[in-house]
Length: 184
Image 1 (cartoon, rainbow, N blue to C red):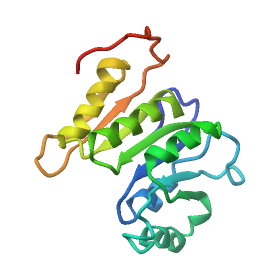
Image 2 (tube, rainbow, N blue to C red; image 1 turned 60 degrees about the vertical axis):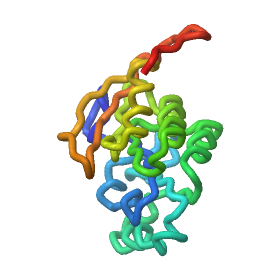
Image 3 (tube, rainbow, N blue to C red; image 1 turned 120 degrees about the vertical axis):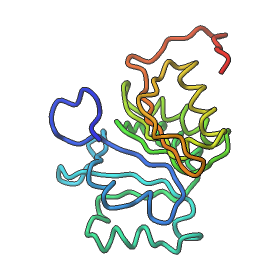
Image 4 (tube, one colour; image 1 turned 90 degrees about the vertical axis):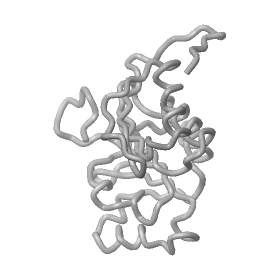
């Protein structure tokens, strides 16, 4: 997936916040991502995976897959919860063009991920949101579309077991009054 407005076929910079056995760091996702802050490795694409359970719950199998695929050096893994890691990335001055959210499925966790990603991502960036069939995930996305003027660009067919959606952040970001709120 390429970020809108990208001037060339250079892939977008990406971050991924999730907890799944290796999905956050799958080699196919490592290829199209590089950081915005010149910390790339010799111009190669880069990928950031945030997964607090990679070692404890999944025995490091995602990181092992990266190593076996020969792309481990291009992936930065943070073993902490995304609602803590994403604000830290902001403080570090990092920026990204693309994000995948597939971790905490509770409203508060998804809400924090999306709100902080809205600050971490370049304006007009895409956010792939997994498990959109879950009411808490859909409600957090609804906040972003109603209050931050993000757009719902695409969603997979409704399914009780799995659905995904692609949101796009507003470009430029919405300037809001201090008391702005739209019911969602």
